[in-house]
Length: 178
Image 1: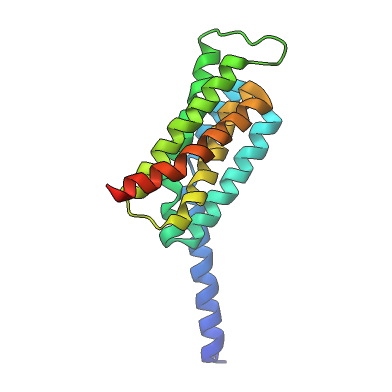
Image 2: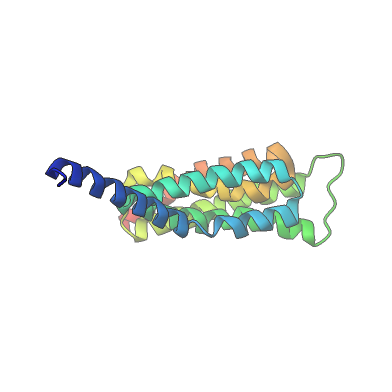
């Protein structure tokens, strides 16, 4: 029995969307190494798992959406690696944190957030991305950075988020004008 045209179209659309989702999942491979760095340097498996799953879901969704949304991923990951690696490197060099509060770690996260915002802002402006993608890139950067800044506790994660939020907009707009 021959299928009607609308049934064939619906089947083709389902296969197309499944292929896009599979491609987005394959492109999100780098979430695993980021989570491994967080586990090795921070030792907070529950937080790492939750944030890594959120990051995987966000990157997969943006990749599935494609086009401009997909282009928001790379600046976010690049910008997020700075606040991910700074506190982990600080910890691995033997810096002690006393009583669950780590002021140097929080400062490293804040500075990492600023540096990450510079990367996100300049990348977005260089690629001539529309302004509505900046928050998506910052969200990706925030999740990547949170994997490292958890080492400094909640204040580290909030410091990193503040650094990202405060610096990214002005950097993006200034770089677009140049």
